[in-house]
Amino acid sequence: MKKLLCVLLAGVLALSMAACGNSAQNTETAAEELPESGEAEDTAAEGGNEEAQEPEETEEIEAAADSADMEGTEETTETAENGQNILIAYFSWSGNTEELAGMIQNETGGDLFEIEPAEPYTDDYDALLDQARQEQRENARPELAGEVENWDSYDVIFLGYPDWWSDAPMVVLSFLESYDCTGKTIVPFNTSGGSGFGNSLASIEESAAGAEILEGFTVNGDQVSGAQADVSEWLSGLGFVQ
Ligand SMILES: Cc1cc2nc3c(=O)[nH]c(=O)nc-3n(C[C@H](O)[C@H](O)[C@H](O)COP(=O)(O)O)c2cc1C
Image (cartoon, rainbow, N blue to C red):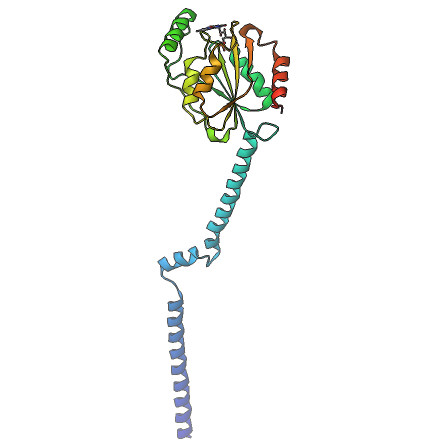
């Protein structure tokens, strides 16, 4: 009986030791499988858990947003019926040319841009006459206050200015010469006290090297308000109707 009890005890002891050995082995295995904190981040970066997939989703959303932005830009700048992008750039001292630019904008849907000198012209008419004449004698190129964003995206530039001493104001030439006009289509429009374009078309052609100049439109400054029908007819003739 004693012998039997000894055998049984020895069996129990052997079984419990074997159990202890297994649990130690499991702990080691578990410790090997847990990554160090740095490895955890690496694993996450590889898409090993849900958190890791977030950057991928964000990237996808951003990529979709980017492509939507691009489409939006194309849509807002494509203004002409034939899909050409139109810019209406104008200089105006007393508002007549600005009013004409607004009419052209209404009909074509182009983007408006006001050409302004960095140093504003005087408000005094007589002083302005002298300043304009002086700039012309010096063939000056006054500095510009701002620039057109996305110049490259425009195909057609309507260019408006008043007649100053039978020519374009020098700041308009500064404007043209500050961009690459190669391959652009330029459509001049002008207001005056009766001289029309004067000699300005030759100046425009010289300053807009590489551009095609289309037939322009001119009207007396005090008749701009009644010129809507003529403006529409001119634009239709050139094929610029929205
Ligand atoms: C400095 C200056 C020079 C001008 N020179 C002429 C000219 O040579 N011939 C003409 O017909 N009108 C001339 N004008 C009149 C303007 O061309 C006309 O009033 C124009 O409509 C003004 O346009 P805006 O209101 O857009 O500035 C001149 C006006 C100014 C201020």
